[in-house]
Length: 367
Image (cartoon, rainbow, N blue to C red; front, side, top):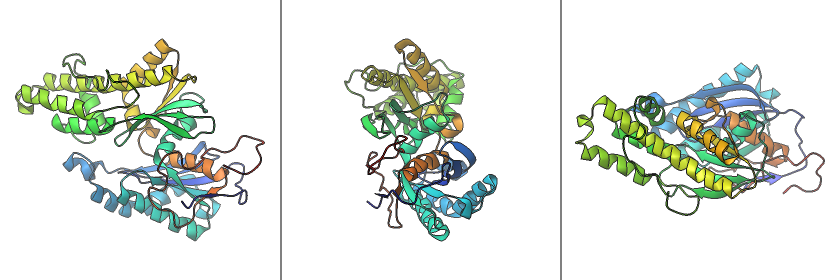
């Protein structure tokens, strides 16, 4: 652990912090002022790189990051109208993610911070997603709340307490929901990325046309599972004679039925979590939070159950650097700093560093 806390090196009242995100197949950079005001945001995606393979190829992702990182950071600074000397700090994703991709962003951030004498801190990727809902959600959001992180690599429920530290309530036991979208899209002959492709096709289908299982519906607790649902789609395809035997309407029905099964399982687990919590707010974050069916069904469940479902804007659902700069600002405001020995995955597990600023007027040593 290289993080340490210090009451020295305090930041200005509204610090300008550069964030860098490279945990998977997006290379992103953003500048935030005061941890909330988005000054600039740039994202370099890799859809064309991975499309021929139907999913992310880690080696290709990291190689593309090497080519893109300096240009993306330069573009974010240019958009902000800033030079490196005008920044007050730097935050970078330290994990979890693809190790090669993480190392590119982390290595660049270390060199940039060293060259420009900037305080530097590593950020947990999932904490970044949760903070995105606080920065730019549909309603003012402060802890405590429940967080549902649902993306290509993660599906988990957290309780975010008043200190801001997330506590795991339940998580997927196998595939993440977004990963299942990508795999089922490939089964249906749809392009990568699978989530948007399935959602588009599902608009033409009947979500009740195919009787697919609702994962974990009869199991206690708050964990998730999506490998069985993916298998059920594969079995249904085989029963119908394979993809070549389906007409467009049947393929749309299968896409709609799969999307409905995923959304209903996410909502059901979230409702169960909310019934056990005193807070009446849940933040839904990550790439799958952009799914329109999930948004509408979660809001409807909130109206029935008496809780508010809060989503970031679409642009902050998928991986981005705004969320990393925001979470990093909170760490830097606490006096947390990392040195150049910080390694990838040093921010796992999620609660290893207090990441919110202390309450106004608080005194004494930081946690």
